[in-house]
Length: 413
Image 1 (cartoon, rainbow, N blue to C red):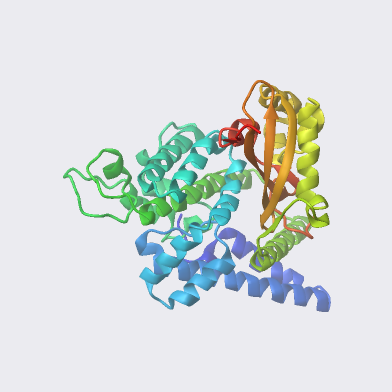
Image 2: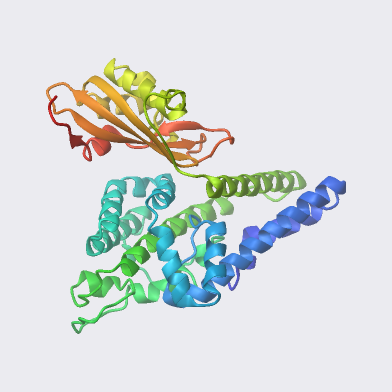
């Protein structure tokens, strides 16, 4: 079940049929149908062009890649696969962009348990320890796939045909299953020449020695996102098999949902592209009135007062989805070991339209005074990033065990 083109995806074909109904609903319906049709064509053309140019280099188009960014890369490369590859690596090498892409991994429980390792791989990646990034992400992917399904086998033990993804761009015939052929290819003879492919078996078993470069490390992140999309596609396929029969009312509902999703994603892409990173310092109204300052002040005040119930209301929706009714107990368990005596907010950095970092100084009982960065994302109730003016709220992403582990001790006054 691989797709020759993105146009062959079941959702694409279904939407095309729904557009025929929409065109019958007067002038407004025809305008909406034309807009969606154009967006569908642009999406399919972009995915197909990416796969044709970079598929043989085993890069995979996945859902976290911005269509706008990919189109810009393809236009700039002008058919040169080597140039496109370098531009794509530069795209991943943007720290804030990669951080935002990684947020989507929270949707999968088996991946959430491994996000601390993923974050360590991210830090190594930007500090030039590419060999470490590769090994850590390979272990994450193997462990995730092993846990994800009832059949306990890691990614390395899967055949290419097992990685065909239903109704997903990674199911393209030049996508995940195509790239997997090199992933598991054996290497029995020691090789010291540089390699630029993600040869999992050769790297893990020590027969490939010279893989410490940004290309292989970036391909490891690329593969991680593709594997996550494959898992989501498997879940989607199971839901599809249990769905109600198609009726006119269900078609109308799906059409409304699809159009709304496309419209929101288009608007989010536009806002992200226009955003310019900004930093706010104490002493200005822009600093004290910024919602990131206000949310951070509220959160740290709750922490200081040991008001873990109100504090939990400021955490990412992903945690609420994960813990449900036990959310407050989990937040108490996470924050209580680090009692807060006092705090200071020193800077607000909104580096992306829907993501920002707040620099703080935290005074903990019986501990060192530390400088810590709190990472926030503006998201909706489904934990999807939503730039202003889209409906959403700033929520803390990392719990104290994560951001305090990165904290820097402050010199005594």
